[in-house]
Length: 363
View 1 (cartoon, rainbow, N blue to C red):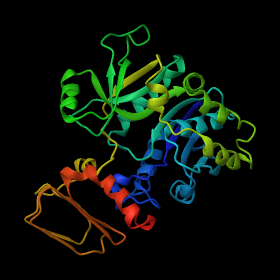
View 2 (cartoon, helix red, strand yellow):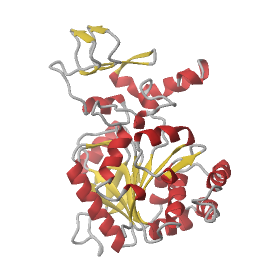
View 3 (cartoon, rainbow, N blue to C red):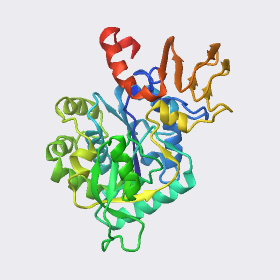
View 4 (cartoon, one colour):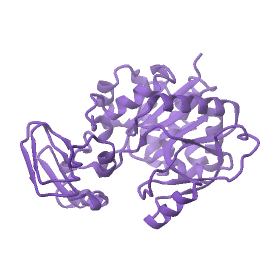
């Protein structure tokens, strides 16, 4: 019996990729890099090396059920867990934990976002298999840390202990010293120079027994809510129970609720060509570029005296760009965004403003 399970979190709306990523079809369901596979399909493909489709669960919003079924027809419908509201990562994982518990109490689980980029899938598979073997043998909460290549302010960081302990003395895995939220530029430079910090990938590996024990210790209210549904999981009453549960469930992340408090947290430093593709800037970094360092997606574009730009437009739109430098130009569903690349962090606020002033149909 294969005890490996994968939980893919696919409920986000990707507002920093607006207007390409919209509420009705966010970035995880888009072929954002022009590979022929959407981000969630690429994530699913990677985990087929780890476990069969029947052991892969997708946790997503109830409004995305049809698109998940369309893009991942290999996934059993019972494995698509539908959230009626966004409650961050801890409730999402608690739901998946108890769903898996009813099927296999000996499960060993990897939890991953649906919308990240991995370019070296062979190395990724090796790291995940090593991680699952480590968590099968040890009562630990493991996360993957990415070796930083620049002083990035858009990622959280993980600091490692400066010495090995009895569990990891012969492994690359390190005990975690601290978690740090997104730093300012000067602090990010210090983190990079120290060699003690890694980017927080948001990928977690643990045994079902260990993570459930951690929920009971650090998030007992969240845990008890989902434990109450044991008799409903995999039945016709499951969705009604989940709808009631989410109405009262706390909104809290795994990092804040558990990982920052537990003593048995470890990090596996890794390098497999990772990006969270969270911003237009990260898309630019991972896109092919022309001789003027423009990342262009759209077969009907004409650029003149333009450098270092992101141009992402539909193939059927003739788009002419002249005299721009370091600018984002993107159009989707008749919404046009033009922004300087250095100010892309403002896009999330812009989306909030549009929602308030223009209405939900533009979001």
